[in-house]
Length: 248
Image (cartoon, rainbow, N blue to C red; front, side, top):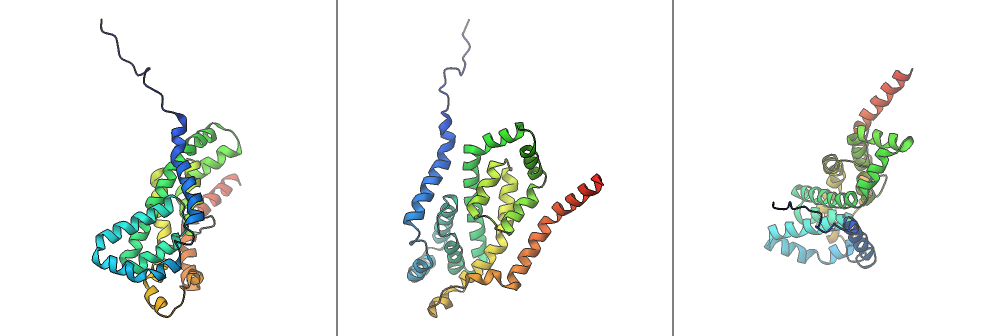
C-alpha cells in the first residue's frame, strides 16, 4: 500500500521572517532621517525645478510613475520629505490631477507600512487583546465598533504623526479595507490644500520666497476641516448619548 505523503517534513517558516518587513522599514527610516533630510527639502525642489519640468514635459507618464513611486517609498519607509513631496505633486502636475497622484501614492505607502506592522506585531497583539480581560479588551472592542469614525478622525485631525497613524491601527487589529478607505478619504482635504500651494510654487520661486505652509490654519481652510472632523465624530457622540440614556 502506498504511503501517504505529509507536510511534516516541510521546513517550518522561521518566526523572525514576519518581523523582517517591519525591521527593514525601521532601518531605512533611521538611515533616511540621517542622510535624506537635506536632500528631500524645499531647497532641493527649488534648485532642480527647471530640470523636473523639462523631464515631465518630455516623459509625462514616466514622470507620474516615478513621482508616485518616490512618494510611496517616502510614506512606506517614514522618510522625511512628505510635505515637500505633496508640494512637488502640485508643482509638477497642478492641483488636478496632482492631488489624485498625491492621495493615491500616500494611501499605498500607508497600506504597505500597515501590512508590515500587522504581519510583524499586529496579529499577535490583537490576539492577546482578544484573550485578555478587563479594560484592554473593552478598549479594543470599542475601537472595532467605531473604527470608521475613529480612523477618519485620526486622519482629519492629525494629532499624531502620520507614520504613527499608520502603525496604531495595525497593532489593534483594524481591518485593511477600513484602514485604506479612511486613509484615502481622510487625507484628501489636507492634501488638496498643500497640492494647491504646490501648484503656485512657480510664482513663489520667481519672487524668491518660500511657500506659506501655515495656510492650512487660516480660518477659511481650518474651519471646513474641523467641520469634517466633527461630522465624522457624530456617530461616536450619538452612541455615547444613547449609552448614557440606557444607563439612566
